[in-house]
Length: 126
Image (tube, rainbow, N blue to C red):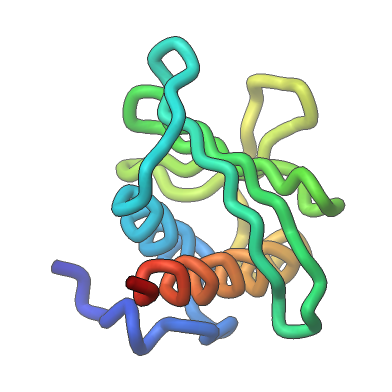
């Protein structure tokens, strides 16, 4: 069990992107997914704090997750449990580790936090 509580991290943008991403993906696993060949696929639509709607497309291939920000300029992330979070080239298969203090991390942190808040709202409904 991680040393942080998912509830404590809700909406906390100062938490490392890696931690936010891992928790988001753990929470996402509680929701149903579509299958595309062998991939698990989720489509997550959610509002942010400014009530702007976002669309994340998440693929899980083997142990790696690929998160694409369809409705914005954030690009894509690859997340591997053993290796962490990396940014991906558009339409490429190369990825680069993301620095926690980078502009890319600053863009992704509120997106992931907003998606997590929305998933928790959806999960709490009967």
